[in-house]
Image 1 (cartoon, helix red, strand yellow):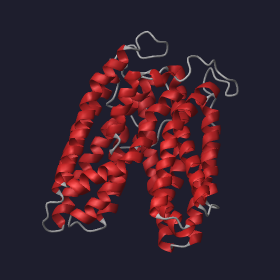
Image 2 (cartoon, rainbow, N blue to C red):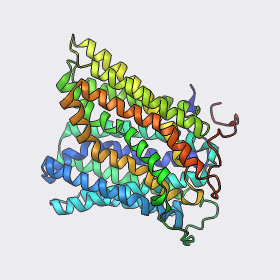
Image 3 (cartoon, rainbow, N blue to C red):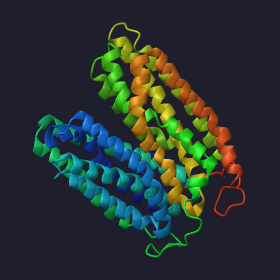
Image 4 (cartoon, rainbow, N blue to C red):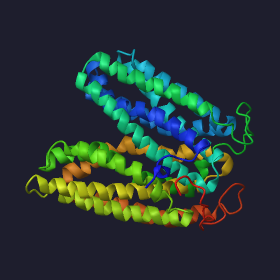
Length: 426
């Protein structure tokens, strides 16, 4: 397949990927160790941890839009660097807190900075990469993130094995350091054309995304599709342990399979998306594939010898990751193409809020559906994915129709000009 399918081209895409790789390694360790650190070292109850994370991600979903707007006004490079440093500082604060009020404040700072960083980085990508290559570049970044998370999770596993306060502190300190290093990598990027990075841009019409109903609908549908995220991290482990005869290590096997597949094939999948029409089709197909994956997951609970549910789960995981990659390719194109060129920060902040909301409501919604209703719950969830995927096409047409006259906006839902053969690895 060639390294060109994994390593992005030289220039801003490669630098952006290096920044994401740097802090995703730290995030991988954080995701593995953080909950046990919060409970074993800080001494918090599961209820306290869950409540703090819920409040934090709710605030983060709201904060992403104004922080993205700030990136539009002040320049996405400077705000991305600032948010990366602030995220590192928030994680560093967690090393010292020992009471619930301080923990809640640190978590809220962390989630708000994470959402602001995501919006600023997306705006930076849109400013530095030509429109025809944004989805391709975003696919490279997704592959990079998955590779970094896998490496970080392995390092976090060492901390789990040691199971000491020192090992957990080391893992979180490493995560804080990676965000500082990522800020240094972002510093190497050029200032986007037309932005000084130090002067306010004209205020324009303010947070116009909040009045953009077509874009809000598209973002809502995308948020529904993003429910696959808590499905992988929360629901499947519980389903496998409680409702199937598969061995316990199946959970790790499915996560490794998902990560490696995205690393190896996400860029190839994204190359098939060349405009809003193909992006809408990709999301529609993702809805169909996610429905099939839910049906397969439901079958894994039918019983039988241990190898049978294991085999069904592996097939289901492959189907699911195929739908995940289809969704990513189409969703990224839609989010970029429907946003005004001079307001990418606030629009990406709004669009990216779907991730925070999915993390916020997804675990409770999906565990109720799947673990309480069993097969019926899987069918409802699959139907939800299908409905959102099918509805995306008319929603995108509605949003695109209202952007024909605006400066910096898409003028049609048709495909972009064909890409050249200059891409690394071609």
